[in-house]
Amino acid sequence: MTHISLKVDGTTYEDDVEPRLLLIHYLRDRLGLTGTPIGCDTSNCGSCTVDLDGESVKSCSLLAVQADGGEITTVQGLAQDGELSELQKAFHARHALQCGYCTPGMIMAARDLLREHPHPTPDEVRHGLEGNLCRCTGYQNIVRAVLDVSEEEVKA
Image 1 (tube, rainbow, N blue to C red):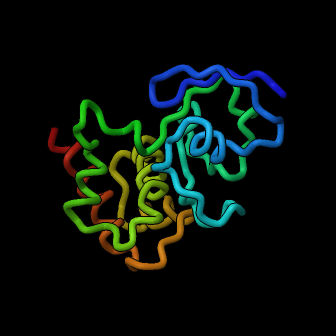
Image 2: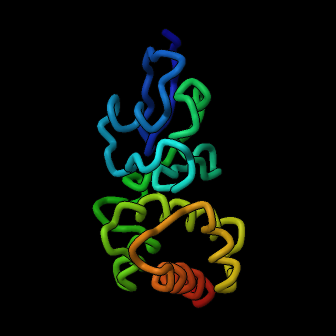
Image 3: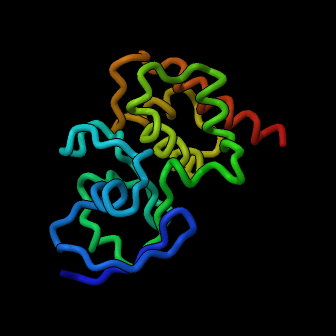
């Protein structure tokens, strides 16, 4: 067992974990944060995307011990005081989901994209979300939701 300390969605956790435990299993099974789904277990689909120290990572391809000392934000940590984040609201308003399985990873990847490129073009959004797969929507409403948030920031 290896001792780790992580800050997840604003709360610090100290735990002893097996060195081979994947971060996704730590978040879901140990912490009960099931908003981040397990998709493919091969890092191809992106549904398990979370932020680690300000960078989006696929939690199915990262060991919990590799995140030791880090700060993680999951899709569940985006809402504040019961109020959805602007990106979550935009996904809802634009119907940027159907089955919803990819949505947490899409939102986290879009958040990372908007941090790096606050005012992306539609092509930049598509390129920025390439590592996240959606089998239901055709991506058009996902792209529109991301662009809506970038346009709102321009107005503010």
